[in-house]
Length: 163
Image (cartoon, rainbow, N blue to C red; front, top):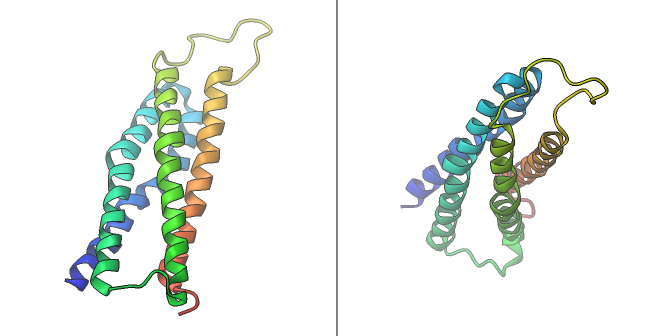
């Protein structure tokens, strides 16, 4: 049983969090080709809502199963790394659900009309409309936070410091 849940947990981490490393590439291409911005926003939102968030919840379930199968005593100093990983995981999931996902939905809504046709009006600032630029910045910042959290969790799970 241990091997099965360990396999599910590791494969789940790869399948669930791996695609998130493509988000910066998708965003970069959208900024270079604004006519495809809505498509990029829809694809990124779909990956987050249909793969990442549900998968992250399954990761929690397989993680709890592993803790129960191993009979790990989370109050023991030997498992401080695991407690730290669980706390970082909870922060990441809550941030993804309550901050990042709504921002991604907002980007889908903001880009639904596509970029304005023709050149910008005389005196208008270059670049995307302010709401799109602000939401893109929020998504970028959130993506960096979530990436750091995921990398820290992986480091803890692989190295098990203090053991």
